Amino acid sequence: MLDGRGIAVERAGHRTWLKWHRGHRFAGDISFTSERIVEGMELGASVEIDLVGFGGDGFAVLHDETLDAATTGTGPVREASETYLRGLHLRDPFGAPSAHKVMMLDDLARLLAEIDRDPRAGLQLDLKENSNSIRDADIAAFAAAIAPVADSVILSGGDALAVERLSKAVPEMAIGYDPCHDGAIERLMETRDFAGFVAGAVHASPRARMIYLNRRLVLFADQAGFDMIAAFHDTGRVVDAYTINSAVPSALPTVRRLLELKADQITTDDPVGLERLLMEDQA
Image 1 (spheres, rainbow, N blue to C red):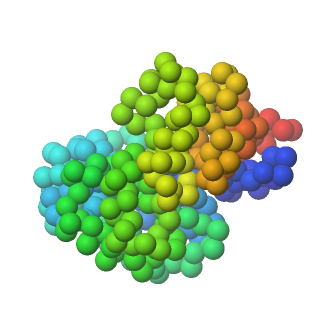
Image 2: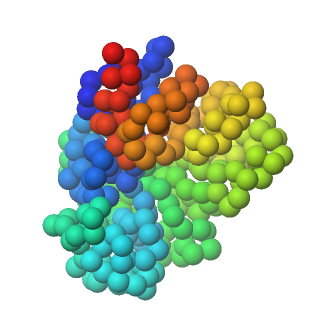
């Protein structure tokens, strides 16, 4: 079933969500705008944003370590004060300043508390920090912001310990884990110990509900005769395959195979465009 909203697709009785990567619904969207986040949550979409540390307590809703490319600011995010960040605007894909302001995590939490969220909607908080860079004050600020809206978010990251530390402060919040960082893909392509990879991911983050997998790894395992998505399903997890950057015909073979393998979610920068591409493919 396809409805043109960029929310989800259904194939052979299985629903696959189209996750709005960095809050993108359409190609060319500006990352992390409050308008798109609200739109997604009200429509019932799966939406993702990133969290990075800054020169204060808590997190900013940004992806890069530096401010220059994505915002009107300059320098490392880690050295920026909250006051400075709140005065910045996001840049559009062409580098021009926009009217959209940089958000802090507590801004985002207030936004979630105020909207009429569709119960199917979820917001992924993708943590870009390692545990050793997260202070107790950051955890306290995170908990104060997120605890009131914990039922609408899932915290994820590539550092299982960092996610665990934050989640202990908000125990009712769902968590996910991305085991594809720090050379994991390259090692697995060499060893081909796919079952060991699955077991290792589950051991690293035993409470994770969702596992985030690089699509290259899923397809490499598939070509080697191992269904990695099914293996994680067997452990009771759901799987997100990332990232389809552009909704172009050359992406179709990958997307078709991910749907056949019953990915529960596909991350994309153009959910509406990807859904349209699939509609045309079915016509």
